[in-house]
Structures are given as structure tokens and as C-alpha cells.
Length: 445
Image (tube, rainbow, N blue to C red; front, side, top):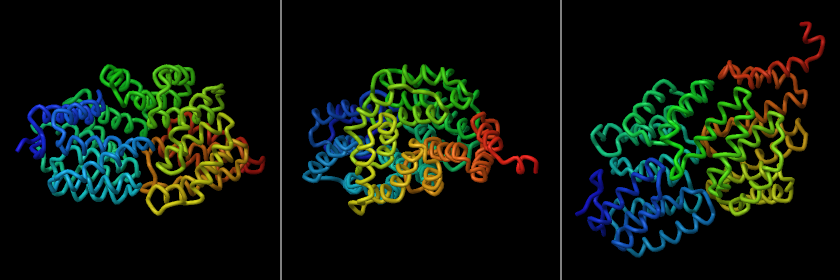
């Protein structure tokens, strides 16, 4: 039986198709090149190559885009007519759950899969991404921790596990070990964008903006190439450092340049664009008509059903572009709460108060914004993204309390943020502005 680089049997493969599959896995690992195109070539060579179809389904199902989800369902329908091994059938079972919006069940199914098949790198990486999309910090770390002892440093793909483990360690607050693992991963594989971004997250969470800019600049040739799927997200990370230092001109230059110059319609890239424009708005910078282009490109994604985290970011663009009807459309869809899957639950419980809070903030109703966002920000393990991405909720809340004159809450939120990042100019401004709004009696006290 033909096997992949990690020793997993590949039913229906030829030697040529196997080599193409290994190339596609590597492209997926480092987010570089066109893994779908490589897999299509492998399928042409060996139409019955099950894992090539399965990996392609993973790539589409993890895109969090309606059209891609439909494509994944079509692939799964074909796979169910094929003869599959136990390992391959296990993949299909997990994917069946995922395309129906059952993110938690799909992730748990791959947890069990990886216990039986710890060298299945596609399953580990796909599961890791599921953990990211459902904001499960513990499994981001532990899914990889369970498998690592089964690997050795000389196994192909070992550095990729280190990079994933680095991100899991960072999301669980183990910053020292996260940075060590991430730096080791990029030493072994300099093109590993995920490991690079894990170290960038450490520096963001620790408020090391200058270090972060240096890290991004020093390694830019490794992550900024045109064939790099993750390049926009890493430019976004660099923008956050500049924003924290009050360097708005740098942020606008990055937005208009590598972040948005190509007008990407990839959901991940548009999430970053929405989040960056919103942060600039919070900082009282006029972003001009940039909202309009972004809002128009969100239209093919924001369906009020597939992935609420994306739709919430679409709402930011719709608010900026003055498209209130689309904000209402998203709200109505999630308030209706159609379906019983995880995506519908995330929409009802978290997307609704987030959208309501951000809409209230945009319209100057700061009390309502604070009321909605204070509770909605506690979404770890229930709604997608990283700590760095979700910080936009707390930043909007802090800004709402300051602008709304909610002195006690403003000071409390500012102190909370300063405890984590005491040197952040943005965080210091929250406290100084809140104190400036206090009554003369309180100032005297």
C-alpha cells in the first residue's frame, strides 16, 4: 500500500498522486501555494484517491464561506460512493458534521481520530483550525500536545506541530513556552506562517509593540510573498503594533497597500480589513470611503447562517458604509435562530448582542453599547477567533464607557486593560480620559 510522508496508507493512490498529495499537505502546512490545484492534479492522476478528495473537502469546509461549504458538501457526496478505509471514513464523518455547522462535534470527532492516528497531519491541522474557529483555547493546545510524544524531530512535518502547539500555548497564556516553540518551529521551517504568527500573537498579548514590529520586519521575506495565503493576516498583526504606538499613518499605508490593495474576497482577509478600519474609527481617524468597497465585497459572504464571526465583521463594514438594511438583515437572521447547530447557537447567543452593541456604538448610543458588549465579550470557548481578534470587543466597550461618561465602568475597564498591557498608550488614554470626565468631587478625593 502506498503511504504518505508520515506513513499513513493512501488507498487509491499511485506513486505520482502520492507525491502530489505530499506537496499539497506541505502547501497547507505553511499556507503557501495552491493546495487545491495540486490536489486536483492528484485526482486527475488517480480519480479514486480518497485522501486527495478528503483533503480538498477539508480546505473548502474550513473556508467559512457559503460557496466553499457547498463545494465541500458536493465532495462528500462523491466520497460516500467510494470505498474508504477506516481512517478515511473517520475523516468523512467529521467533515459531515462540520459542513452542517456542528463545529464542536466535528472537532471532537477529529480529537478521537487523532488519538488513533496521531501521524495524520491533515487531521491534526484541520482539527487545530476547527479549534481556532470555535475559540477553544484548551484544545488548540492539547490536540497537539496529545500527538507530539508520538512524533520525533526527524519526522517530516514535525516543525508544523511545534508551530501549532505554539499558538495553542499562546492562547492559553503560556507566553514563554509559546515563544520558544514558535521560534524553534520557524528555525526548522522558515516559511511556516502559522508559527511566525503565533510568536506575533505572543508579542501582541504582552504589549511588546516594538519587538513585534522588529519580528515582522526581520522575517518579512518569509511571510509576505504573493503565493502566501496568510500574508494579509500577518500584515494585520504588524498594523496592530503600529496602532498601539499611535502610528496611524503607518496603519493607513499598510491598509491601502498590502492589506487591501488587491481587494481580496477571502473571508479571512476581509475580517482583518473590517477589524482594522473599526479600530481606526475607535481611534477617531476618518477612514473615508474605504468602508464602501469592503461592504460590497462582504455581500457574497454575510448570509446570517454560515459563520457568525464573519457576519459580525461584515456588520462593521455595513455600518461604516451606511447600509443599515444589511445590519438589520443579519440581526433578523440570527434573532430568528434557525437551526440547532453550533453556528446557529453562536448567532443567537453572541452575534446578536455583538451586532447590537456595535450598531449602538456607531449611532452614539453608548449606554446601550456598553450594556450589550459587557456580557458579550465573555465568549471564550463559544465563538471564533483569537484573543487578539476578540480584543476589538473590549476596545469598543472601553471607548463606549469613556464617550458615554460611564465613569465607574470606564475606570474599571481601563484598569483591567492596563493590568494586561500597562505600557499601551491606547490603554493609558482610556484611564486618563475617564478620570478627566470624573466629577470635581471625585477628582478632589
